[in-house]
Amino acid sequence: MTAAGIDLEFAACPMGCVEDGRIVLEGSDRLQGLPGRFSIVECGGCGLMRTNPRPTPQAMGVYYGAGYQPYHTTRRTPRWSAEFTDRVLRAEAIPRLKPGRMLEIGCASGSFLERMSRRGWQVEGIEFSKEAASYCASRGYRVHGGPLESAPDPGAPFDLIAGWMVLEHLHDPLGCLKKLASWTKPGGRLAISVPNAGCLGHRIFKDAWFPLQLPNHLFHFTRRTLAQMLCAGGWEVERIFCQPIVSEFVASAGFVLQDRGVWDGIAKPMASFPWWSGRLNLALLPLSYPLSLMGQTGRMTAWAILSRDSNGAVLRGAQANAS
Image 1 (cartoon, rainbow, N blue to C red):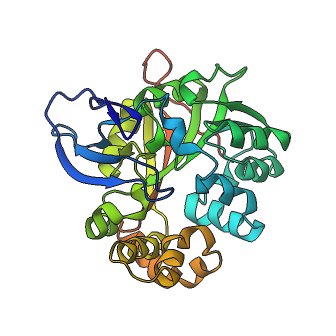
Image 2: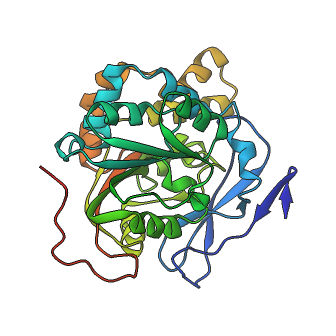
């Protein structure tokens, strides 16, 4: 099947459900304006939402070209913003973990690898974009350029695996979670973040919701469906929390204004707000913190600990790698 010259495939629910799904949204690529219109289907069994049909793994590279904004943003993140992101938006627990071996999935240009290396971690990365992976490697980091599915097994297991806004991009997220579990030490940690499709913004803005990002985002998680998939992948969820950031509300409103033909001098800067907002996110904390406590912001972070070995056996008495 093709759409606007892009090869598409139909995909069943990765959780193994056989119930029919229903289309809940249709949308297009708003980040780069590339061709194609895509549907989001909600599984009738587990409730997991997925983009279906979707670009094949071979065709998906079209949507990760030089114009894909997240790759550029990570190259120019100031240190104060990076530290704020690590401690508040991603997880405050990172500085309390005893340094060991860490892998970042979707390491982009390597800014997080750099910060964790400064804290004493031995770091490696995996990045789908060959361009971003090459730039990251030029900074001295060991990086596999290509999809996680084709990445070779590591030379030694990891104490921590991190993936910031990456699980929703994977064609087989459950299989990848199992693969990551096989690469992790007993008691090792997984830290991931994904868009929160169960939040108020998703319900209000629908196809104009900024974190929707079709077709790059193949899965659209709620707190419940994320926890279900982590458990099925061999991970025991320790905590899931919403990040105190509301820049997606501004960007989504910008998309709505663009759809209504409002002057680009207003609508366009609003639609790109997450890429340039910087310190303005600090000014929005009085609004973003209460919304995060109510589970209504557009990003959530999950911390999980390895609960099963590579053969599926439950690990008992495993001690977390924390000081």
